[in-house]
Amino acid sequence: MQKAQPVRGMQDFIGEQAARFEHVVGTFRDVSRRFGFRRVEVPVVEFTSVFARTLGETTDVVSKEMYTFEDRNGESLTLRPEFTAGICRAYISEGWQQFAPLKLVTHGPLFRYERPQKGRYRQFHQLDAEVIGSAEPAADVELIALADLLLKELGVGGVTLQLNTLGDAETRGKWREALVAHFSAHKDALSEESLRRLETNPLRILDTKEAQDRPLVDAAPSIDAYMSSEAGAFFESVQAGLQASGIAFQRAAQLVRGFDYYRHTAFEFVSDALGSQATVIGGGRYDGLIESMGGPHTPAVGWAGGIERLMMLCSEPAADALDVAVVPMGAAAELAANGLLAELRAAGLSAEQGWRGNMKKRMERAAKAGARFALILGDDEIASGGVSVKDMASGEQQAVSRDGLVSWLKARA
RNA sequence: GCGACCAUAGCUCAAUUGGUUAGAGCGCCGGUUUGUGGUACCGGAGGUUGCGGGUUCGAGACCCGUUGGUCGCCCCA
Image (tube, rainbow, N blue to C red; front, side):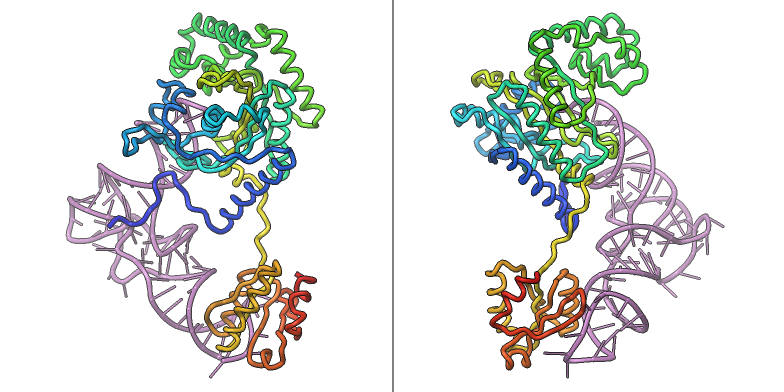
């Protein structure tokens, strides 16, 4: 039999890792609640067409990088590689138009069939925030402010916000044409990679890592020259809103999104500590997506952030402390400990006991569990109707009556 | 899909240019103390050196394959 092992790119978390995961998700819940975002739940599995249609049937992304399989009815299903498409599908099929504008958050596992590397796994986890049904730049500002506060509360340092605009449909189209014309005129100077992108995804040439492309990219036409007055005003408004919110950003002219449904704002919070997988939170406005999926024209903006990447960058969460460890000695005390534990837990205190071993062993377990107090319960205590309470930090020990025990502990724990 | 590096105890790592019964720290279990932890001392369990083949008198070490990991490329929704 094969040795038990996880599927490639899948991870198991325990201890500090699990605590960090919980810390990131818990902070996200808390911060998003303060912004008035509501939780939404959508399936992990969708019809393949939900993702294929929004991503383009022919791209690498669809053909090679999705977990796609046939179910027993021969239907092509896909484990979600992102949140947005599924949420938009739900928006259309559940008639959530009636609730618009919607401020939604969710988090959970996503799946991409890729080669694992630093901060990139086949099953990974993201936080996700979307505003659906609002065309106002204020929605973009609020969404970015949510991400900004989240990073601050997590204590993530060394992150900068990069901001760009892709303009409206008209601006984007003209700019794209100009870029294609520019690069096509200098094909002989382009790297092989960029030549390929010229055919598949010309905007992404701006994102090149090839030094030889640098001069051409720097000389490429700027979107600003093609910006419609409406698109220009929108971008100005977003920038002014960020400034007024006290959120620092950098204009990143090379920051682009390949798909046509992206409009206006594009942004990424980029870390200087994660190697080549540097984006911690990325998002933008996708006014054309829901329409392209067969729904009504619906402006929307959103972002997603990788939980694993945030876990690597956030400050270490405080270890969970245990209020009370019960240390029973003898059969009568072990029996009595059950009632004592029930009482403590019902009162809101965290309490557990060592299930076996002599007193030394149980005290060791109490210390290892991080207990504030050890409650020693033996024949002497049962006879006197009290409990010996040891403060694990100071080592001081005193007798407390059984009747007043819970209130005594609650006052101190 | 491509490239580089890596794989020894539960974990982190040793093992002289290929040489005999593969070691240590931490952790775990037990004891010094059958009613006292965080520090001490003593003892113990735990390895077909990822897996398969090859070279050699002899392989943890060298070669080939394979699986997995790490980092990068492609891609990045």
